[in-house]
Image (cartoon, one colour):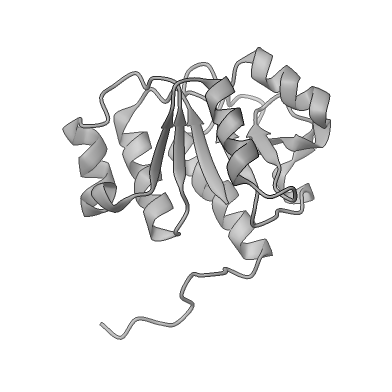
Length: 167
């Protein structure tokens, strides 16, 4: 699985997601220029000492990201975009270990041009996390954690230890 963030805007969210990715052996891809420097202390503070060990890939734009997906993903994997405008709820989806999960920026989400591209490929690849009608969106790092761990749960937590630590 791969986590991809489209132009993230809040350093601690990206740091938290980086830590989550490192702790689950999940590569993190950042698409476009973040609204901050990845060297900022708030990114590294949230990512703890894991940030330097993270498998991080940077892509100039959506097109270069898509090109990298075609060369690095198997034919089984899908690009899944998470948006509050999707009809399908994430729990209705059967995840694959080769899937890529794309999340938009905190204030703008995923651009309509990208959502339209994915919708054209397969509308089932647009998923949402249910929230109350008064809520515009969840915190980005919480959303990533919800989705990633649902996928891991469905797959039986591959490559993650289920043994109780001794210390």
